[in-house]
Length: 66
Image: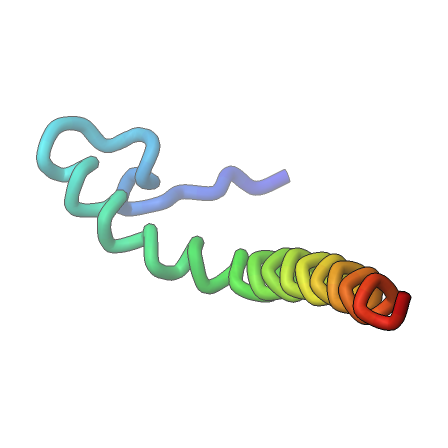
C-alpha cells in the first residue's frame, strides 16, 4: 500500500487567504459540475408552469363559451 503524498494541501486543509483564494478558484468548476442538474430542474419548473398556464387557458375558454 502506497501513501499518497500531495505536495500542496487541498482546499479544506488551507487556512486564511490561501483558503479563500483556493475556494474562489474552485467554485466555478463546482458550479459547472452542477450545471446539468440545475438545467434539468429549471426545465421541470418551466414545464410545470406551462402546464398550469394551459389549464388556466382552457378554463377561460370553457367559461367564455357558456
